Image (tube, rainbow, N blue to C red; front, top):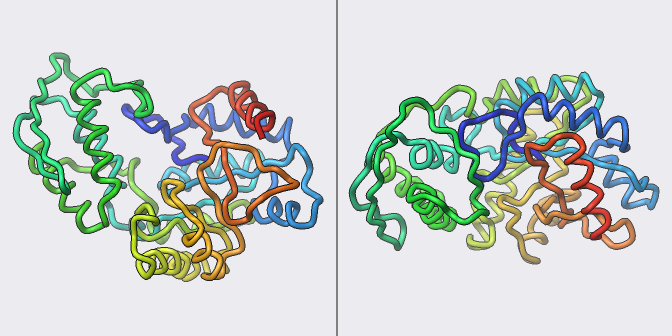
Length: 313
């Protein structure tokens, strides 16, 4: 599971793999594994012919760098991939909410002081300015203990925003913008446009899957809203590509049995979670397929992570 092929200054969720490392990872997969399209991978699972060293490459969210950077590398190495799109963000010229929050809070340089109300929580904000100039680069990851007031505040706000429905989350983000200051998003950090999606599916390298409309954790929604997110994103993907969409990826890996059943009833053939494991070829659930998230690793580090996942399965 990949998200971005980029090298941003701040990447608290480890979503980015630098282009040179991504190419090295793909060449290692080509040399030592059996890369398959995810559709062929699933077919092998179903009929019992999947090789032990089979691997499928997927991307979540729909960042524009998937088209500009990842696709040429995949094509040059000869590895297929499935890219899951969050359709509500396509062409909006605005960052995904977690990226905007990262730039506002973690990468901010100026002092910020005031009160912030998001959802049911109030935050007293008092952050000092950075003394040195330039862009603040950070190697901190959000699964590590926060080390600074900015990191601590970022985790608190992220946790509150994640659980809000889309409109409430937008209101919360607007309050963050008002306190921290507006910023213009870099073109490199934006989601795909409709034209990007059409370019993505030219050739035989890339398949498209759906990843909901708004990237809401689906189990936090009423059943009717879950169905709208699941079916609506599929409809948009099929309209843009002119091809059937068989695959779904749960936002945040958030699912339960009713949600998986809704995905099945909506006409998908299979769906991916974010559970970090190898797939057991003897016992598997096509609507809860695990994936190993690839971090900004060297090729040997990726291979070790895949071997560990297989040993732990």
